[in-house]
Length: 159
Image (tube, rainbow, N blue to C red; front, side, top):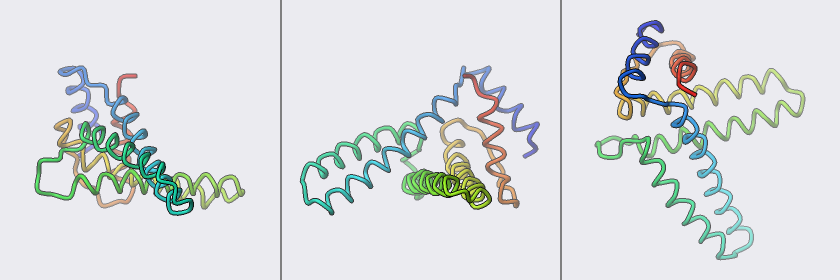
């Protein structure tokens, strides 16, 4: 799909449905953090054997499942649900590694990590935006193709 056609389609959808994708973007970042909280709760339990971390993990997991259902279509036969969670978690982790590299003065490596994190985030949206917003994305052969389409989508959203 050409970027112009993609932008045109997004604008048509926004006009016809008052779509605010920026809210979905915010939710996806919140979901990344919930997955991280699940992981931290697990590791805290393993380190301390304190049951309170299992209670936190259970509560956070239930919230993450509830909120993920707002973006991810769960009623098909695919692995979309699980893939979505892993795309978000992986993107968040690579972003955090990029932050560490940047702090260590390894700018080139940090940029590469950020690009990979963004690509995974774009793959999350390419997997889910069709079912949530009825937007068709063509897969492009270049590594940054998918993310560039998603980036354009997010740039043109209502604030």
